[in-house]
Length: 245
Image (cartoon, rainbow, N blue to C red; front, side, top):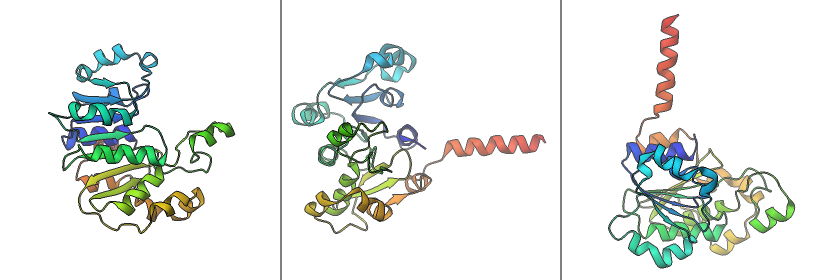
């Protein structure tokens, strides 16, 4: 399971078809989301590397996309109110700057516009190594060649500690997919912001399951009461093969 699977299953099966993506980069996820109402936010679109026009015409649902080439902070300060005046985003993917306070602002700003029943998906919530969990400047300075997840996980811990009006869990797949929905919080954490600031990767490694409310990927389908169509298709193929024998 990966982020595109999660997003498209929610778009198609739960009808969450008003899509906002923060941190679009080359459009690898954005263009493949099967919604005809999509808003992209990124300080620098790398569309040239993704063959933008080819993707638009291969997937006609991209014809009405709206693009904001600004930071997410600037988008929410100057553009969001007008952009969402008529249509509020109910499916949001956050994959911008992978640092605690940036992600926290993106989530909290998005929650102001997201209606009840909406879902926020946050990438990079469960880094597996100390190097991948470093702050950006530290990661660059070490010359580490692996993927950079940053300390997005701290934003999940913060939200589970400070917000009693949302529920947060992390699916244990694709570098950790944070899932945020509105509703009375369950099993909140007790931490202050000062305590969260002081947390280290070693602390996360020792408390990952509890702090992140970590769930197996399959729990996603149970939680949202939707069908795992890929698993069902695989079972159908297997039954046909067995029956053919």
